[in-house]
Structures are given as structure tokens and as C-alpha cells.
Length: 116
Length: 109
Image (cartoon, rainbow over the protein chains, first blue to last red):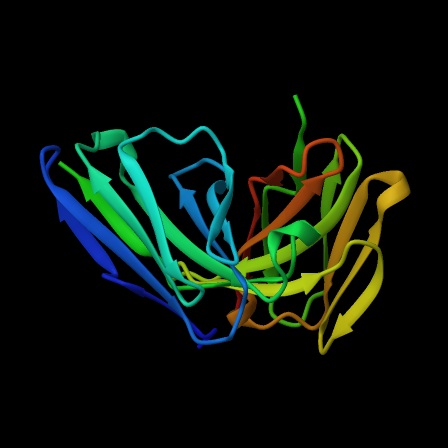
């Protein structure tokens, strides 16, 4: 157990559905991250929240919408996804905020998303 | 473009063997981290090592930022070491985090 939980662990959705992924960290950390891991591609950083403010967004399509209501919770809202969005979505947290740059990160188990 | 390259891409070893995994980066970095992803997809932080050498049990890592590489050493391999090892580097120029494609390690009993 890394102290970072994600739900659901598996999700199958149609292209017209709206769903949300949830991440919760129990470590008292100040920054949270969403990553996408596609088959045969390197991990991609999608969003970074530091002290609940979005500080990094690596040109992610608008059909992915993050939300960070407090320092312990992070959501990824999904809307009208495409089949190529099928991937493992990983959440991570770090003690230091992003202003210190990349810090030691702890990952959740991921949500395996399949878009039909 | 900026590259983070890991080698070898695949490695099969007998239990008990030692191995060295390499991460090269094409630009200056100010942070580097090694991860292990087990066969069930769980990504585990191994080392946060922007420079120098760290050791944790059978694993150790060394980053030589001036020469743009990092090494992960695994000694006396066990079957539970199987999985994919990733390095991730944060670039000095724009703070982007880039992951390598990983080294897939398979330890045979």
C-alpha cells in the first residue's frame, strides 16, 4: 500500500458516456498528478495540482477535465472519449509542491479504462 | 526532441544474477526518479535520485547528471523483481517530466 487509492480499478465506457475517476491520498502530501499509460508508449504526465492549484497541463484534450477540491482528493472527469483514450490512468502524490519541481512521487494502483 | 532512453529494453536473468539498468537523457535534468511496475500494473517508487548514489537493500542507483545518465543496480535477483523498470527525468529547460520506455525484466526461478 502506497497511501494512494484510486477508484474504480476498472472502467468500461461508451464514447457518449460521462464518467469520473477518483484518487485519494492519505499521506498529507501537497501535490497530486494524473498520468496516462498507453500500451507500448511511455508514461505521460497529464495534470499537476500543487496546493489545489493546477500548475501543469501537458496539452491534454478538453474531453479530460481534472478537479482538485482539496489536497487529498483528485478527480478526472471523462466526457465523449475516443477508443484511443483506452489506457491505464495513474494518480500520484508528492510531499513537496510543484514549485520545487519533480519530487518523489507515490503512485496509486491505477484505473484501467476501456472506451468502446 | 528531448529523449529519455533506457537500456536494455528487455532482460531475462536467472534468479540470483545481478543486473544493471541504464537511463540516458539527452538534455540537462534537475530531477530523476526510478520506478518498478509489477506485473499487476502497480508503480512503486524506488529511488528519487537527482544526483549521487543511494542504496536500499539489494537495489542501488547512481545518477551522474553532468554525464546525463543514471544506473539502477539489482543484485541477487529474485522472481519478485520481475516487471518493468522506468526512469523519469525532469528537464531543466522547461520542468517537463519525461519517462523512458522502460526495461522489462524477467527473473527465471
